[in-house]
Image (cartoon, rainbow, N blue to C red; front, top):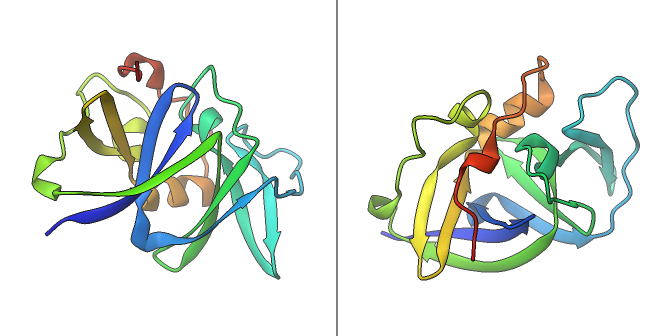
Length: 156
């Protein structure tokens, strides 16, 4: 049985999250900065009275060419709401879970939790994020170092 994923771009990477967690996609939402919060937390977002952390995916994954300013993906992850700040929005594509390729063993830090794996595309990879791990890290960030994401292959 195939599973749908929302695809989006951050820097030169194509990433995906489970489409069944998607609440909505917005543009240019304003968030309130929180003093002392880690770089990956852009601030707190108030969406129609629902407060959630706004996670800068580029900062979270240490993607150097990320802007993460234009689009905001609102997710419900195991009952917790999070907002992912990303560069661009793609399509919802379906993939067979048996075709998921596990992440390389040389990744370190948060990536051991943040990346479920990747699907091969005709041009590059779709990297699937582990949204429960990202949600946990955003809500109880302990100062972990960036994950060294630039060691993964980029899209052509």
